Length: 388
Image (cartoon, rainbow, N blue to C red):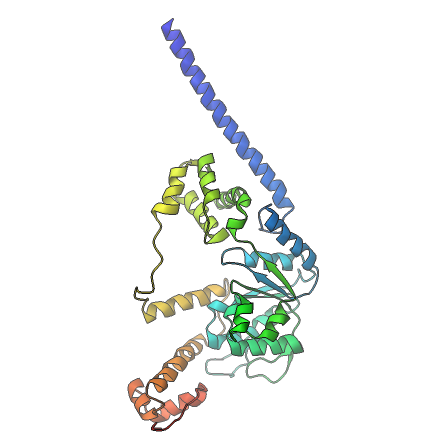
């Protein structure tokens, strides 16, 4: 009798466990089907149904069919390029190319060559004609990402192109007509930069015909479950095991502030899919990833990375900005020029424009220094008591 009751209790416990597992599986399938239905009515890879995101989608729907210039505003990681791509994909230029350039990742002296191209022989290392991003985007869309980091002198030429509708390649004489829709994006406050004299007000008004503000993830917490399932599904499509979060883990996700926004969420979901063997990941794993492994941001008192590491980091960003392509020919000379100019200018500043002293510090002769000053268009500030 006792054995029968024990067997029945064990059977009931197993049955309840199976029912609980089945219930959770059905809930996951319900959420998946709901997400699939919602994504079918979304724009590209933009995922979510929060009121703030719906407002963004409505703006995209209104603006996409036009040729109006658009300025996308939002913190890093909020998905500004996704919005730019949606404006292109659902616009009348969808059959043309979508060409992106990141101003923050582009060395100052390379920006004009990358934007407008150059002719063969335009400068040392220009062994062939290079078609710039404007020309590559002909008939399509040019996305100027992080335009707030664009050097002031490049802003002037960009404004001229937008006003006149044409440009010339560096070293060229024949004007090239521009036929590309301009979409720009930034995480900076451009109005403040205009007040500070760091961004041209006329260029700001030219690119800010329509502005779209992307909310940070902390303002659209109701989208976090859907985004999480979306990123787990992407990981599974790439061959990783199917994963999900239990209720407590998802609650922790929804309460976390996500300073890195959607990009941080995507990276964490991918890390969970790679590192954890459980099919359903619990809150302990989430706490470990979000809090235990956190490292404090470096303070201003800590020494910065060396020059070589800084240059390497900058060049990695530059190559990454080209995605599947490669920079145009003559990269070595352009990068050397980028380093030479501040090196010589600061040495001249330190020696009070005394070219003999500057040449000695640099380890080059005076004639070479004079030639570099002319080639690099370095201003010489002369004053009393300063040698030449």
